[in-house]
Length: 560
Image (cartoon, rainbow, N blue to C red):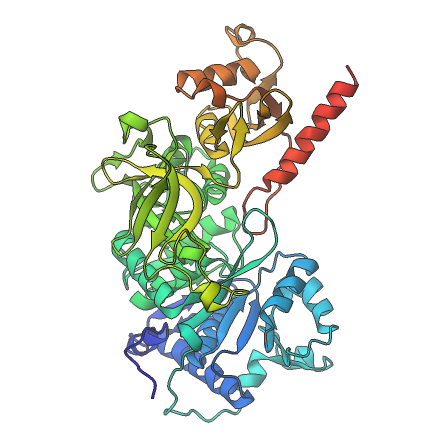
């Protein structure tokens, strides 16, 4: 007998079905009309019934690759309802990445839309013994009349007689999601997330950010990422209204926010920078007053970008979160700005004793344990976590070999940091990205946090280059902010001129003024005139930057 006291994300459907039938639950600007909560629930039930009719059940994996839409959420919940496991694939992947993921998780069904047509059409030509159905998410039956072996959402729901006796099921171990994280290697790695993981993390966001039934939430983050999914579940649990954009575009986002009076959204620093840039130069811009809650993840907001965000959304409470896919999104939260108390936090002053060492990422959520595992008397060490938020395991691991930590209880986040006397977690860097220079450990993120505070720096990536004397030499690659100019001259050269210059000497002086240890200050600075290489989850591929820097240095030396 199923134990319905166990957590299940479809618990939310009963409550959603009771919401007022005249209030919209989902809004898509490109669709003719909103969908009410009862209609949404009926759509989920119909799709779940169709999956059961095909023989799909407990533990079956269904891969979904699509842009954000209400149909995406309906598929997610329907798969979960029948005890299946959802494997969201990133529509931005290359064919090779998609092929690796499909071969790893062996889905019985692949659901796609036009966004990944280039690689999904190639996958259809493969004779996978495990893949039984291809489904087009949004195409109509008439559009696919000549397509073989492809179903549509419309086809699956057609002519079904509603079965009110249906009830939800679980996959083994309560698994519901395989969320891919590329780490810093670029190779997709499947993380198994449970119903419990998703529910406790969603409840934490509801409590800390303050989400409610009155919210109008704009889906800015892709639903193939854990941040976008966990926030979506939060909004389903409280019964908020969902507004969908297929993918994030700053100009369109601002139009949608104003058109539908959006109250909450999540961002990453690049999104916030794009939103700010899209309003720059508009003298009549007064800010968006409907937005009350913004949760930023995927990296901290600089002081300058925080100020721009406050100007853009003057009535919004602005929070920042630190987390990872393996912890089902956010571990810690920190309020950067609260308009109700007219206060913006200066994170550089939150801990005077260590203010130049790392970046403050706030305090753990109430249900999360975080501790530091350090060597000797050092207060700095590996950041470990445990609790009901931690993943079940990686997809390619057996349960008995699923420990990714120092012992069987704690998950090693792969990050280095410390906890100050106020309980705030400070992030210094990644264990794997550590640079060894002159016998000292240097974490690139710490150096980048200091350099990014210079007003002329748009972006920065720090790498270690092999050096015969130091083992590795610290080199910083700098993207120069618009209206600033790179100079090869001295610090004095920029004094007294009307142009704003940035140079090797100026940046070294900036590091010294912010008390960055001398051995951590980059020995070389290189201007970087293009975007940094990123994985599909937005993480910098440091090895690629490193190889390009080494190539440029070799070319420079050969011309001397």
